[in-house]
Length: 59
Image (cartoon, rainbow, N blue to C red):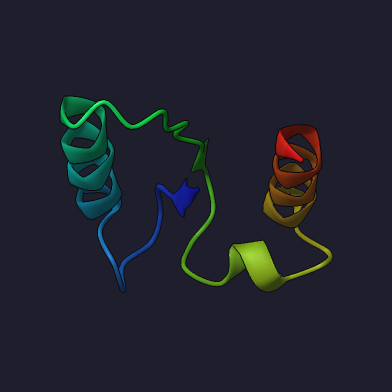
């Protein structure tokens, strides 16, 4: 999961990581969120809810 508006860590780094893992045959899912670096820890953010739902579904 990565926020597309993240200015601290570019989302393209996560995209590169996903490609590298897929090239090694690792099953990986990418989830792009519209928020920034901190939106996934803000419980009032839609990104936080999306993160929790995604992780819960994965479990």
